[in-house]
Image 1 (cartoon, rainbow, N blue to C red):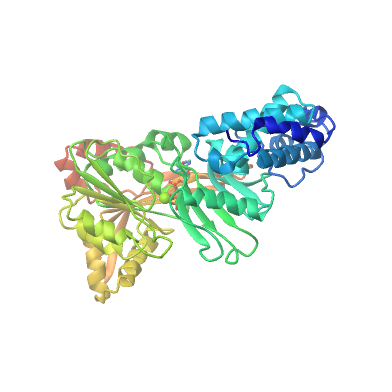
Image 2 (image 1 turned 90 degrees about the vertical axis):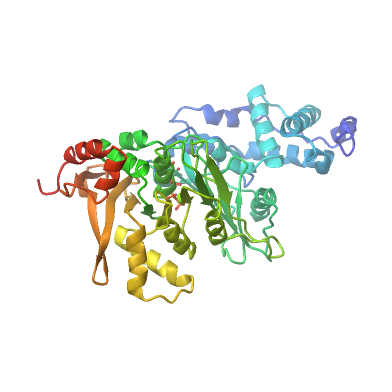
Length: 493
Ligand SMILES: Nc1ncnc2c1ncn2[C@@H]1O[C@H](COP(=O)(O)OP(=O)(O)OP(=O)(O)O)[C@@H](O)[C@H]1O
Ligand SMILES: [Mg+2]
């Protein structure tokens, strides 16, 4: 049904069958012991080789080098498959049936062309080919690895991943620029978008929720750049952050209380520092009875409460129309009787609407902002308000900020790859023209161990009662708060 020539048509393929040398010895490389001699460099065919979970560099080398023969055979099987199969028909099938169809045809090709392969080699080849035809080609094995946080493809020949906070190069390659671009196209077409020379920048999402950005030539000078923030199904919890050393138990308790007692919170941090993760953690402590509205560019938050409305922005369509911005969403939110508004990422003038929400009865609203310290976060808010075209005096703007934001939580990815919560800072008011803050907790760096890991401690700054004490009392949390603060080590103590 799906063959251009029908499966029986393979009889004709046989006439031109190429006898290829057996693959077995080269493919065995992948199972070879550590000291085995290195395999020859793979031909520039897709090298979608599974890399051992948590694989370090030596393992990666061993696992990802396939022989020239493998790629030659794959290339021949692939060409025969493309000649045989009708891709437009195939796209009408669900994934399972399409895989079955490809499996049947590839098995036929292997038999007819007389490629000598073991069952496991054949399985691997099938998997690779299915990934190329149906999935995301060489990206598939990276997408399958849960421990990868980011995938960064810099043109067809270079790719990096982030694992455990560290960025490392992988051997994953694309056949050429056109294979990479067509995979990007496949990804973005799922959200009704297009990426090519005339529209070279595109944000999209994979079906599993992973966030995707593509920027194509001529803007990306050395080839299409594809960046994926993998979606973690099981979001990290505060307990896990404590286990990782990102925060102490006492610090985590303070964060829980901040989440519960409806402080207005801004989470500040650099790219990939863990802002969204932290926001998600805080939302766990929101009371079940509260009506929460979330606004995000790409739905990442996973609120557990029953009364949640999730909103997502929309980029403009191919004609440049239909865009719905974060500001539109936040404004609309205010008409939806929210008790709390959660903004995934505050980037522009919507900050003003969020601040207004914060000081007009929507206590406990939260958002994240890209900035490297609580102080910088405050000036970013100021400049974002200016971006909205408001010509308010600086002092008025600062008063609005000081009157709206209660707590800034700073997240950071340190140079050893670890992610830490480096500040819990309260915004306490104004003195003259200046916003006054006080740190409840900071992460003090003592130095580095022999392996380059940062040694540091989370310390209390010795403030007996935080500014939100009364609020905590109102929610009957003052005792827990006092205990948490008392149990923290004090700076200079
Ligand atoms: N404390 C932590 N310890 C270990 N891994 C973490 C920690 N916090 C976050 N991560 C992981 O780091 C990655 C990035 O986290 P997250 O998406 O929360 O960062 P972000 O600051 O929101 O990034 P972006 O600026 O791109 O929005 C995720 O894979 C997440 O699981
Ligand atoms: Mg984020």
